[in-house]
Image (cartoon, rainbow, N blue to C red; front, top):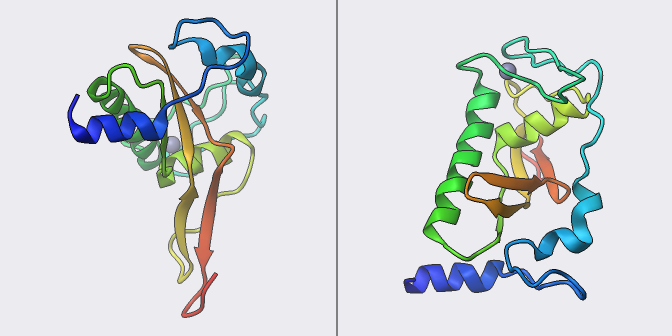
Length: 156
Ligand SMILES: [Zn+2]
């Protein structure tokens, strides 16, 4: 582990919960499982870019190939996978969300996406907390994310 990896590990180290399992990779579940229980997506969730419609049974919005929201969301997921592979033993990552991740979460919640083709500048803010579960299984917590808007020449 190089210096950058050690710094990342220290910054993202999760603390085992009281009474949690001793396996470092699974201690997080002991106290936090309820927070990540599958939520009910909006019944009318539809992607404005590719027209994908929510599958309520699967709780999944499957975008068409080439959809920019999907591409951004998938790129973030791929980056998380690579990051955890580069930081073995680390089980928690905090990072800024991508626009696609925020748009995906807004769609799943039934929210209308902002028009990105105006003079309002939208910037992803807050942080995504990514939990490593297994080699190809991660959970992303978006509760700390926000979409910042700056209007015209003024601040937000
Ligand atoms: Zn889409």
